[in-house]
Each structure stands twice: as C-alpha cells, then as structure tokens.
Amino acid sequence: MIETNRADRQNGVQAIGSSTTSRRHEYERYVLWYTSCEDGAVSLTDLSTDLVSWEETVLGVENRAKRLDSVRIKLFHKHVPRLTDDGVVDWYREDGTIYVERTADE
Image (cartoon, rainbow, N blue to C red; front, side):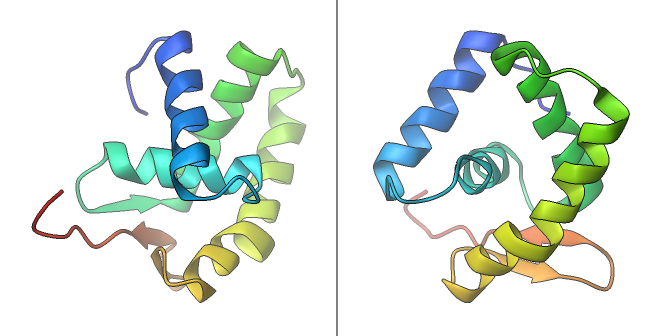
C-alpha cells in the first residue's frame, strides 16, 4: 500500500485526472496515480485494497469487505481493460499485474 496522507492522495488523484483527461472515471484516474507512484508492476489485489482504503478515508465509504469485491470486479472488467485498450497501461490478466512503461523523461 502506498504511504501517503489523505490530502496528498486526493490531490494526486485530482492532478492525474486533470493532466490526462477529465473524462476518465475516478477509478481510472486512481489507477494512473497509483501506478505512477510505484516502480514496475502492481497487483490488481493491492490496487483494489488501496483504492478501497482511499474511498474509506477520503470519501467516507464504509463496508470494506463488500466494497473490496465490488471495486476489484469493476477494475477487472471495466477500468483496467479500458486503460489497456487506450495504451495507457499493460495488464497481465494471468497473474493480475498492471504495468506502466516509464519513458526516459519520467
């Protein structure tokens, strides 16, 4: 899990949203922010867990177990495939990892 405080995390997700496209779903912006904070591949499980933690602290969403399943399903079936189709991330479904290729100027 990425160690950030609530304000840093919220600002990071908002900044990613405005720097790429405001049409992206909040979960997709979160995926972009999360992967930008990590080196190499991230697991869908870790990403889902961190996203639910963010929802709890920033948005006040409760019922962690139910939310975790819901978030994981939405990421797996909708948001990560969309980011993959757009060429933003690479996703290896077999092992559940998401990878963002870094360019030389990053």
